[in-house]
Image 1 (cartoon, rainbow, N blue to C red):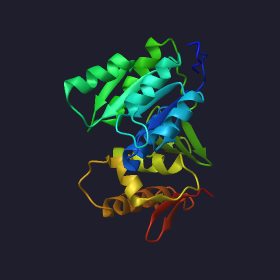
Image 2 (image 1 turned 180 degrees about the vertical axis):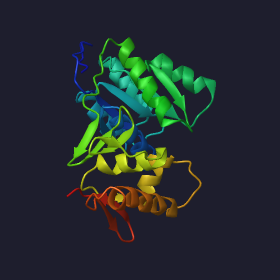
Image 3 (image 1 turned 30 degrees about the vertical axis):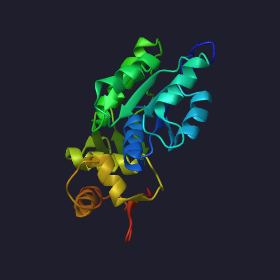
Image 4 (image 1 turned 90 degrees about the vertical axis):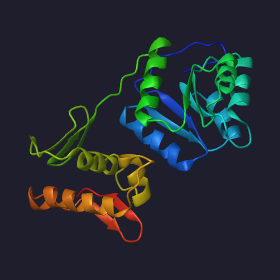
Length: 239
């Protein structure tokens, strides 16, 4: 955690602030950071981002074009206050001068949209390593009775045996299971599992949910755990 003096302490799971006004991009980054064992916190505007940055984020993923207070001003303020919190800047601007200004103000890295969320997470890990912070993602197995979802092995097991889900089926089940009892819209699931630039439609989610139900419930006798929310999406509700 950073302080005005610039010191850090190790954390089992580090707090990553995602400051982005586009909700779909913000949710996608939050999802991938959480999957990697980080604790994501969110800010939809500049004033909120500055307040949360001062409140103990270990790293800030910061959109330049935030409403209320832009990313350059936030970075300038943090550095003027002596805060050494690492900053990864996000921007739709591709001009070299914008990148140079951000880096000269004290940003640690710069990512131009559109980007891969996995690339952003990889850059977050690299910056934390360079900063001397050790990231421990902790346990990566979700357990619900006979059902186990092992993210490190990317396996779904019933009674200890891998049931061989396809990659999209695995990703969809994991997205639902790590948000127990949380209503997730079809659009959110599309963004988190297929990516925000996916060209398909919501029926893709329905097809994959049907396949999951067949494999979990019909083939392996598990109780129903994926609840349909008509007109909205789905919720993971283990028995």
